Length: 498
Image (cartoon, rainbow, N blue to C red; front, side):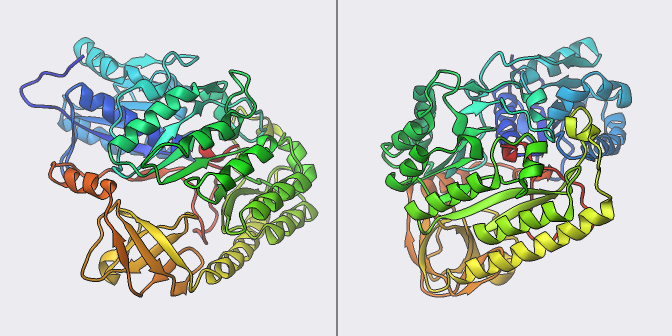
């Protein structure tokens, strides 16, 4: 289906949520451009606005309907404008969306994002809203066209869905049971990306290290990591997010022994209390979690480990919370994405007794953040004096223009802001720098820089010749680190639910 009006119709995709949603939005953009749409410039009203939604946070519904309300005057002023709502909240609310916001033209779910162009055209021709929600995946999303936002780094889905039953999590009911891609398909996508200039891939799944469950190979994920090591030109491999239950020693060995697999691990803890972990239906306990951390550090002493933690889960006592603080002290996380428990209708935890008062949750949350900030800063200060190779990124450093620095990620995924000399590296190039200063959430390198120009930098430079509007940011649901505004109501992004 191709759009053939007098001029190409414009679109904007607004992304709410986790890494999986960010990657899905790349596919939505690819589908729309394949159908003849072009991305809207930042200052123009798009002909089509697509909301790719998250259902994890408690206030996700209010945010969505508030944003839809703000668009209503633009829709009235531009009768040809169309609004589409997809993603997890659409899968959950279904027809309720057009009841509450009758100016919405299309509602589609997590299992049929490939239907968007057809649904938009059908809504236009029939002049009525189209609501299409499927209960299971018909086409693996990675087979769909994709407009990748970065020419140097890319997400690669190895699976979708989740077989876990965590009592706080609504995602499995919206994303469905785990479905795995065949290893050959994953590697073919990785090789194609590298051929286009990509240097770094992040293997993505709701529970990435249970990969292989569908075709009965318990070591499939470690084999996949090792296979990525054989892709010529692929310099960095990461993955997110693993579940401690499924984290096995063969994965640790693959990380340690495969040169392009980064010594960086994001592994959700959620709580350090065994009693709370049991209530969360997390099938591991603090001792097992700490054992994994210990074995990772034994194999890779330089590994940077990050995590997700929920504060104020129903029934959490001060003793339970202290157990979490104890695990945080022992684990020495490079950083942690911290969340106040958020009640989600339809989850077992929402109906549990012992809902913790907000003021208690807030006070505990602030203590956790303060402890983790202290640890993060100490861990970052240990990096001062080290020489690291930074993959130069676009848009990582918000103050780069003012400080005249560039930014990028070290192999362990720490954010580095660095000064540059006469040779200015491009996004996608590599810069070797020496760390001179540490803050809790970033490092600074203000010394000499050695630049290695790369194919990825060439790919970025080639893109600059094309008129492309900047990609919109993620608006809701992404975790943050550091001290947030008071009284946030958050739960982990779905890519971090494992």
